[in-house]
Length: 134
Image (cartoon, rainbow, N blue to C red; front, side):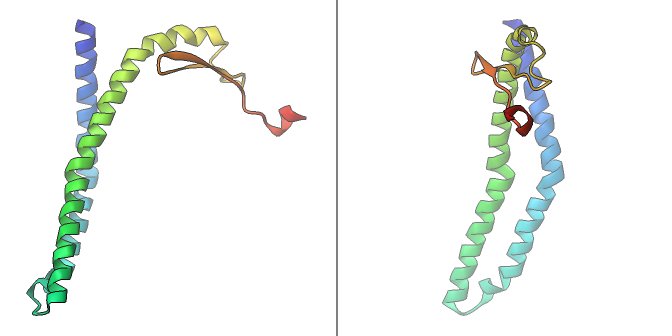
């Protein structure tokens, strides 16, 4: 039980560092795109035309929802997927190591091999090439 809690904390910290790097690298660009779009259509908010005011409200809603998805919802979803994937790979890594030696090298030389899929060992067949078909 203690090994599973240590692996989950390491996968969480790895996913957190990945998300931090992604937000530092891409967050500014997403924010810049949203704010520059908003700045470009801001003049419509002060128009006397109802059509332009309505168009501004639509652009404002799109920018706000786009920024919320780009800076909040999608990073949170990707973080949850990364944590789940890391926990899954940590849980199944001992099983795949046990079966790696039984398939003759894991298919490195095009001989197929086996892999773990959803907790089951799946035998792989080599992809036929023009040389093997002849």
